[in-house]
Image (cartoon, rainbow, N blue to C red):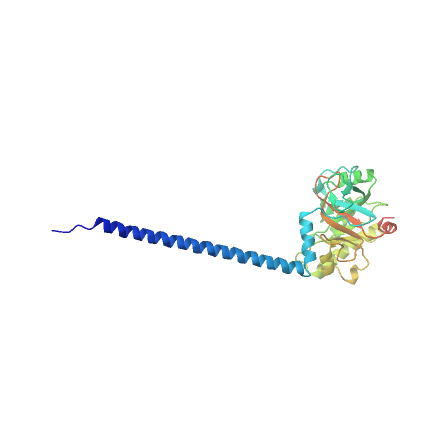
Length: 292
């Protein structure tokens, strides 16, 4: 006669195995939670130490300025003369309304009417690009700027794929510059695959052709770093510069015009706009006016 297994004994063993597995799972979960907590604490400590080092280092002013640039309205530098530069990107502009609003306490530019207001005294428009391109809003802007009594200026955006002579002729044909306007301007921002010597040769050819036509030296627009790296030779010493340099108290290189922000608010313009200041005294502004 075969003996039957003890059901009570089997059930007890089964329960023990289940309890053992459940205990192991709970133990693993606890260890996992502890590990995650440790990792988070280490990450927070590392972030705190990194922040402390940055805040106490010489890099803090630069970091603070870029944070300010990204998250806050730009501050308006002190100047006697303010202006803007625009292209078709700004769409339709109400030129009879343009003006800069700012808070006189913080000097931050405001979109709406504020405690301070600056008149826009000059406007520089994109005229041409390369050998064939004309800005779509050039004629409209040019006419409206003159009607609003604002000093008119025009710039050419330099292309690395068209020869300098054709680009200069494109600008001369369409810029609309005349006596009483701001001197012609060349906007050069890239070197592409050109060598430094090739770039400088092309730029100087454009400058000389335009200078011969208007009987005055054109201004050069570029960034502070580009000026130092590629246009810092004796050939460019006779030329005046308009420098784009943001999130700084003042541009890193000497210049006559300073584009201090590309995130400006201006009455009459719905899009962000570049705002510029003339960095010399008012009496020096006439040196940059066409008299031919």
